[in-house]
Length: 96
Image (cartoon, rainbow, N blue to C red; front, side, top):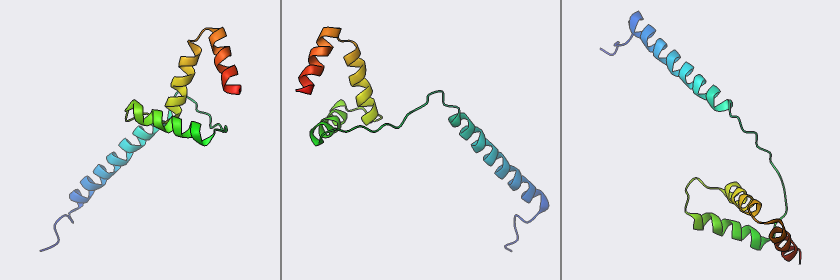
């Protein structure tokens, strides 16, 4: 007969399994919500060429988890390592 699983103890066990699953998921979500970093959404203008260059760098780096923000962060960290006069010359070159 097709009446298996209708016993009260079977239903209680299934409900307990469901409750455990839900509470475990809630704990994982709470852990994700406690991120220490705050991100800002910023808007700035780029030419199509620069946009394509960022995409090309993303492909060339061959890092699966990389994204456009990571490429920009890497560029900023690299620029921070330059001597001030070299940075100034580079910026002046980009302005022209």
